[in-house]
Length: 505
Image (cartoon, rainbow, N blue to C red):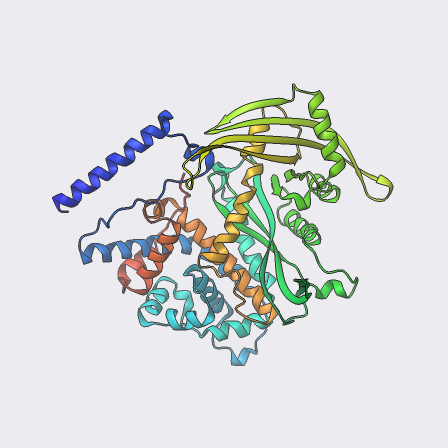
């Protein structure tokens, strides 16, 4: 390394160290990284590599380490994907079902934008050779339409079951033990639109009318559940895709997000019957039937409460809070001042003639902080308010943890959905206008996303991810596998080694 570059890197390191000292000492008014769940920004500096040989070695190293992580999880996936019943005629099958499933997973691991891009990019000689070295299960590189024809007829839900079995194995091996909240697995649930068209391309599509002219639109909506760990990792858990076809035969009403929640909750409970679960959801689910489901499943919960949601509960809670000033606490969270107020054991009646009753615990958090406006340069006093229904009684000992460390992590599922939509996973891309194939691609995308999340949060790749950022790392990984002919001997050695998967602290 040249003296000039060494001096530059030394100065950058000194500046970063001084910044960290200011943050710790309070000279910089901001919320600490560990409290707000943020990570330091990527360093704005030139590459530390000086020669082509150094870059080739770095590409080889990243490809080897990422392959070791992926291959650690592959056997479980292949075990269950291989059990899926093959609907094709046995005499006309060129590629086994497990070959096509690995191919489908890898197209999302390397974030291909469409079937055409898969055909164009992954079949290039270097990329193809490297992938077949790292994943000999491929045997050959099929055409993207071959996978599509399989997904048209296969039981698409079985693909998701394979991903769930992988998650169950990771839980059994206690990979997430150090990242739980009060020994509970935090599950965030929220719905999102997948895609829409102006024409009815499948019977299962939901319908709506938009604008003043009542133009018809047909769309796909998905209720997502993710596992949120204490260190910020968000893992795909289950998807409940709303479908009209099953419900139009019974009732004139469409399938809806809340109906989908009851189905999803039933699946989660049957899949993880003994798992200690806490759920966080938005204001749509702050209602009696949802609370009853959570109570019957023995789930803890924090549900967003809107002022115009449960109006009777809101009026009673705010009224009682004025009469119980002892149920309040102030807390300094970084640069924000929080005021918590709560009331326990509000009786809520619902159903015909109020036949059902639930005891609700309500907490409100009022937050103030100062913020400098970039446009004017003036410092303004900011204010916001949050309110939740809690599944456990609120006290001074748990109010901060339940509100800030649990309930406010609901936004992580929204961030996760945005990543899947806009950072390479093509959540909103149809991939096929055959409904069953579209669902199959969705589940393959979820598996690819899960593998990438585990990889970028693994201990073995932590330094590189911190240097490049998650998106930058995944781009570099694709470049390493598609633009460099990897050394076969080293790849084989790593492939056959006994790798131990550990998440970064």
